[in-house]
Length: 263
Image (cartoon, rainbow, N blue to C red):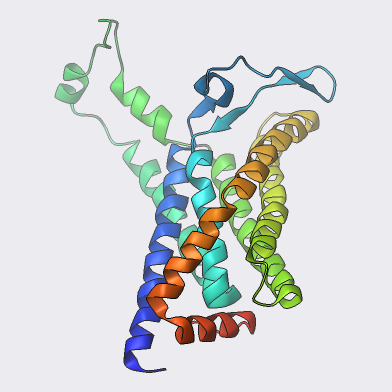
């Protein structure tokens, strides 16, 4: 591999890693907001009855909106850099997510300036407003949610790369859609229940039926999005192949299938 090809390989990993890292961290931060998918689209709540008396709607975290970008980027990194490339960026991202939570935990205990409280003391309708309380409520997350998120993230990524490579060994260079979609469906099934189980069952007060019900809804969303976004995987693949050139692209894909380390 000549110097130009090595530069392209390095640049590609940096770009894909940056996209992966940015969206994973951002999803964790904005995930505190829960939105109604039905009402957002102009429909009435689903009111699905699952496991007895527990009624469930399609209420999702805001982080779910951009999490599919992480799915796609994971599969592309896996395709060109193999399991070691995915593991490298996954552990880096997990460390940075932990750092983000640590910094947020520190800044939320800082004493707010009086003038900041005064100039933001009223809401749009003139009602009293405590901006310090709002700031802390939005950004601070419980220890259970943090541990659950990090555990589910790493476990999901490791399972994804394992299933992807197993399917890659069966399909060869063909059927990108199968290994990408298949690995996502398996890994996100685990992810959907692990994060809820740790955050709200182990550290919280949800019962098992609630965990299962909410996990099913989350997985339905991820299952659907993974299928709908499959064409984007082919678009990304085409753009990258064009950038790398046929020879280098084929060489990297072959190395990735043999689980060679990215240098």
